Amino acid sequence: MIDAPVAVVTGAARGIGAATVHRLADAGWRVVAVDACADDPRVPYALATREQLRSVARAHNGFVDDVVADVRDLDALIAVVRSAEERFGRLDAAVAAAAVMTGGGRPLWETVTADWAPMFDVGVHGVANLARAAVPAMLRRPAPRTGRFVALASAAAHHGMWRLAGYNAAKHAVAGLVKGLAHDLRGTGVTAVAVSPGSTRTDLLTESARLYDLDTVDDFADHQLLGRILEPAEIAATVAWLCAPESACVTGSVIHADGGFLP
Image 1 (cartoon, helix red, strand yellow):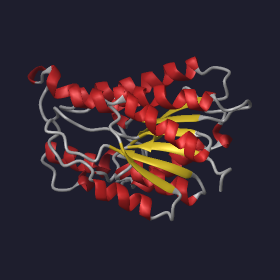
Image 2 (image 1 turned 45 degrees about the vertical axis):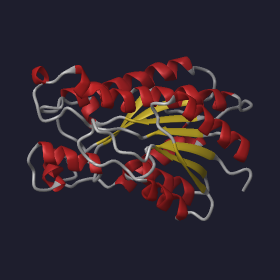
Image 3 (image 1 turned 120 degrees about the horizontal axis):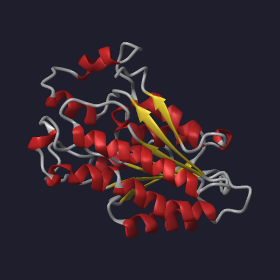
């Protein structure tokens, strides 16, 4: 499978990132699944583990390499991309799915910069770092190129969320970053797109429910026209299509895979 397309996916140990790895690998991609696999004392819930990342890779009979790396570390991501090129000979797509939620549950004026820092360090600077590492590799491919950069934004990039102003700001930044990157990539054949999921059954949504004192994440279902919570595999299906050559006409856009999320 030397000619199989190759992707790097961050935030790959669980949630939408893991679902994206599964979806791509099932479609014949070689995938480098990346996660920090470490808790952060500034994040009020447990983050993904090394075993979770290994289990994602083990499901695909050698099609997935699992790598521990922190998206906040640009040099680490550059090394991941170089390793992917050396091992598989190419890079066709990069998916930035790593994100955290901090500083929620309080109004803006009761938060401080430190409360927001992890969300921007991981969810914004981490996206930029993946682009800095992966886009040059995709541009090294001969024309006509079909490189794809996909970042996970959120419905929070488009709607205000009660006592989540910092998360709103971080996800708006992701949408803006992707739009700017797409213009930088004009005419290269490499595209940049953001995907904004609605309420999806992930650990981050569980943290949202805790902040809102809800008994279950399913209480968020009324915010979506589908009348239910989305599953990570549903978002991954959208992301996987955007990674494919057939998505060439979509760039500089935000795809609302949100189940009809209401403002």
